[in-house]
Length: 195
Length: 165
Image 1 (cartoon, chains in turn purple, blue):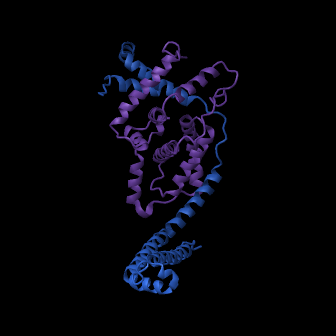
Image 2 (cartoon, rainbow over the protein chains, first blue to last red):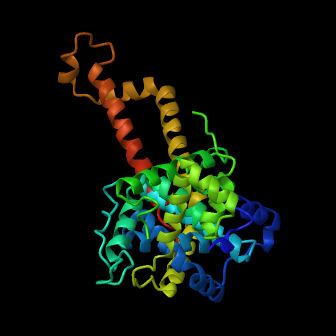
Image 3 (cartoon, helix red, strand yellow):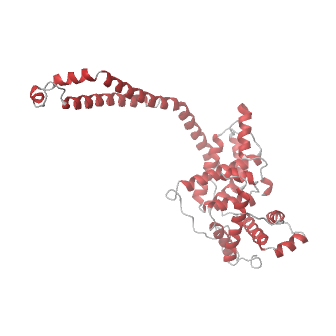
């Protein structure tokens, strides 16, 4: 999925919008449908890994697309729109956590299906365990790792999405990776033991 | 806390993220560097998790999202249009309160005398200094004026605060 990495971050999209002025337009319905087909599934996967809850992931997905549809966009570039969408989704997820635990649903228990594994397959338990290990990280660490290593976002894009200084992103990523490696070791997934 | 990165780490992370085989020199480094090994391991894990197929979950209907976005946009436009009216309501309320205060200061003596004359003689006689302004008159003037003013302002505020649609 590295090919989706946007070369321009959301602030650039905003700056372009300001420059474009009247050229910035709202998405049309057919454009939106195309965009949804292209990005909804990976965005949902990201949100699901962040929240651990299908209902929250659905809500955040809807909210992200609604926020995007409410703002005029100066660009129609898929990479830039994808970066924008992931930033909006990250903000929406952060808002959800800030609103506090009362309004937030609990993380769903992992089943073979929710872990993405076919029931009965021998690797089902492993996949469940992988998902569970990722959930053991803090939300911000999950965001960092996913954006950096799945979305292939640049450090400045991650910084913009998470409201961090660009200089702190490499350090935080390093720590998140080290923590994850520690969790993997604790669960017995050493280099020689992993499939 | 100082963050020291192994010089080979960026190349190793790129290789781990892309699933590419490591060059001989990088593989040798990886074997001898525990830090790079754990960093690469974490990246490989996250990539593996992302490649795990998602649960068969029905995504929200895009038509519903489109409809919802249109509705939200209309509400936002309405709110933006009514924002100056909303601001004016508060300005009117502040102006009303200020006018009331000015009126009270300006007409205080007259109001007090007016109320003092209206108080029954028996009540006025009970006062220690009949010629002076009765404290009860002061309280009555203040309460009466404030109540009337508040009622007028509340009525105005409510009337002006109605949605213009």
